[in-house]
Amino acid sequence: MDKFVIDGGLPLNGTIATSGAKNSALPALAAALLTAEKVVLHRIPRVRDIRTMERLLVNIGSEMSVDEETVTIETPKILSPEAPYELVKTMRASSLVLGPLVARAGRARVSMPGGCGIGARPINFHLAGLEHLGAKISQEYGYIEAVAPDGLKGGHIVFDRITVTGTEDILMAAVLASGETTIENAAREPEVVDLAAMLTKMGAKIEGAGSSLIKVQGVSQLHGVTHEIIADRIEAGTFIIAGAITGGDLTVTGCVTEHLGALIEKLVDVGVRITAPDACTVRVQPDGGLRPADMTTEEYPGFATDLQAQYMALMTQADGISIISETIFENRFMHAQELMRMGARIRIEGGRAILAGGSRLTGAGVIASDLRASASLVLAAMVAKGETVIDRVYHIDRGYEKIEEKLSAAGARIRRVE
Ligand code: EPU
Image (cartoon, rainbow, N blue to C red; front, side):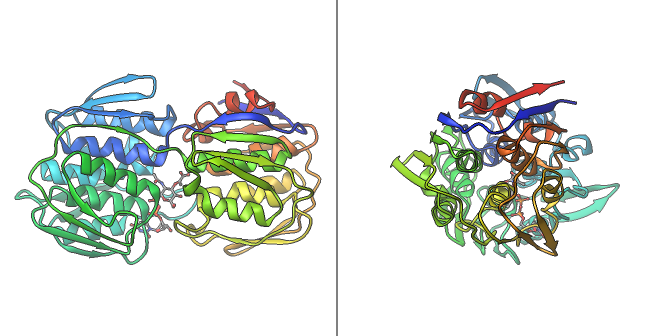
């Protein structure tokens, strides 16, 4: 298993480029199953979760070629409408094939996702949504089966709670359902908007993506498409916080500043100087010491749960107490224990983390517990005195493309050891 060895204490300077969004690329790959024609996707980040989704598509019957960040997919026939346990257990987003498979083939069999490091993460809303579209759902032998032999029919879906992949799954099912579907309390994340843009280019009729009410007029078939994935706002946000925590002068390019509003606002609050020379570039510079500020995670356009761990690393360096409230997942503070091993002073009370701030972090051996937790440990290590060894960096490889190369180029001392 690979480890990262990081020598802290150096500011990040220069420029880091943002890759395509993992969480947009995953539904885009699943959406390729909706047509027999050719789908060409650009700016697909070469990260482990994407490779897992590609394997899943090939198992299902897609023909695929990968040329750097361009993936070409053709699925003349659905050979096996199934997401096996071996793949679902390594990536829960495999359940994104559920909607497209029922819509295109009238049947999907997807392994039930098991427990997860950050919370229970059931897919009951995806299933209830598909039932509203006329699918019959059953569960046996650890698998969920959804069938609609005569095709899906439009319906009215109200999500009990905002769900990102749930919205995407139902959107992909609804585009081929007969008649009109309305999705209330839909997720407004940029990744949902990106998926809707791709589906629209394929011939789908969608209104309201990016708002909480999405309307879909079903069509009988979709055609091929060429689509470029949006920038990864979580990766960009991680680099912006990296610039802030190390007190460097760092420019993050190729992002969408509009998608980073809540983060930028918070960083300005805590005393980081942020400028955006254009709509795709953010420059971070130090502006005196860091002040503490409380933060609560929310659905988009609020502060992303996927940046909570990184913000926690930053607040260990603020001059005073800050309270971080996690409202999306019930168990997303695993990084706090590891940050404490590096000298952070944090108390966890249910869904709240109370940070004393002003901690002089020192290098230690730490363990990455999930994707974003690993990113927060990398950030903490870059500001800590001495050497930090982060174990289980396969978590970070799930979602960050060449992170050690990107950070090294900006002056970090980080190396991967086997
Ligand atoms: N939920 C249910 N039932 C459902 C679906 C969700 O109870 O059927 C609950 C979840 O347990 C959670 C909340 O609703 O408490 C919101 O979960 P959501 O469904 O929105 O999460 P997701 O779609 O599984 C995506 C991202 C996550 C990101 C969350 C929240 C992808 C592939 N994953 O997950 O990204 O944290 O939205 O923004 O888009 C990551 O990239 O590190 C990551 C975990």
